[in-house]
Length: 306
Image (cartoon, rainbow, N blue to C red; front, side):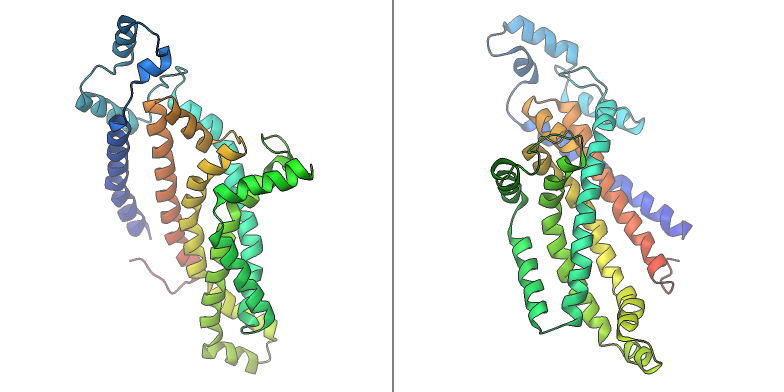
């Protein structure tokens, strides 16, 4: 297991290096001048040039890239061009809000998808199965950038049941979590149904019934546990997608997380902050993939990584 872990950690190095390089290149290819954006269109040319020199933006791109990589290795992602706050500190300040929203969205998705997938698989071909399939297809078809405003209009503006934006109470979390978790719930429900259907056809399920196990026990204790590997894989992979989707959701509901920070940084052309946010999301995505692989051994002891 340790050998596999070290091998996977070594493979993440070129991935993160590629992400860092791509982000650096793209952000510097976007037209516009951060110094001009900070000072305004009416600023004098000498003031803009002085600010560029102070921020190091007049240096060659290769030199800026080298400094960025050296700092990233040490955990120093630079300083925000707009607020002069360390990038790592800005990300850590917004991290609790993003984790709170991501965890709530995952709870919504898992809490809806797993029971729905189990019921649909056990009742295959029945009205319950058709309703579950229709709901999952609907959830996949609705993008969160449309669902979010719709939920806000109905439940916040028209009915006044929930706050429309901000963070502070559990009520503020409801609409963003549903908006972010709906599509994931639909995907998980379909995966749970398909995986469980395959396991229900296996002889060991019938053997469990023959030994006197109830239908519920045979489904949940035997078939469902063996069907979890593809479901866990999808959950792990989609967690990165949840962080990416949080960029849109946090913007819609003014949620003070990393996604909203990223959008604001792009608007101000704050190079270090944009690079830091995207690099953090990439590291989280890679880390979740590794954790998902390690979970296989917990769910199925037959799996050996050596």
